[in-house]
Image 1 (cartoon, rainbow, N blue to C red):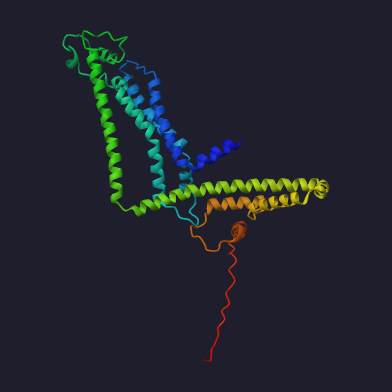
Image 2: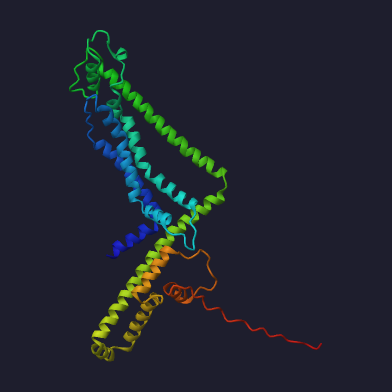
Length: 346
């Protein structure tokens, strides 16, 4: 159990590297999935185009949505977008930065799939075999086929086992031509994406870096704040459960606890008392279910403003009680300094 906990903490602390690794694994999975995928063109004029374009478009959309599902920052983005403003205003630039960061990682696997599909050329051949010109690859004037029969013949070009029109059109020449066009589109697609990535990296330093650093800083802050809040709630829940269970057993078997406390050593008693104090301190003054519900509700509806004070309230009692009672209690002001003035007759 400790190993799984350490692994989970490691993944949380290195979430960005972990998500980059997930994106790389998805890219490799998309390439392996395409190689293991059995491409079966229907070889019918009504379905060739839909099947070929569907293989080229639908799996990238699925990989793109899967990238959003596997990214933990999606829920954080949605929560930040839908939360009430309260005492902390929402920055649209931070939300746009988080959305762009998630989208960039999610686009890796779809790009790999589209590139591999265009380089292979099977889907392109299945989709556009009907549009071939018979004059370029065969004899159009002497075939004696109607337009419908000619379309059926052209639709069979991707299926070499059922193609029976070698005297009308050369299947090898037509398939090679369409595969060359598909590979040309694949290289053009990769060149366009590389050029766009280069332009983004080259143009970004030309603009002011202050806004970019601000959005990057606060996006990291939102992520870290959410993790710290979850960890604090987890520690509070553990301490609350431990103290509640201890109080339950003490109330049920008070005599047994008193009998064992007389026989226990003094050091053991001191250790138990220290542990109990530490658990009580982790409660931060919140010791009732309704109070905790109010604190959690107020955290969602009215997050505290990002303006740290020099002298925060001790153990969060003033702030927590202020939220619980529906009013804000000011922290204890520091004692006023007394100034002594000395008068000299010199």
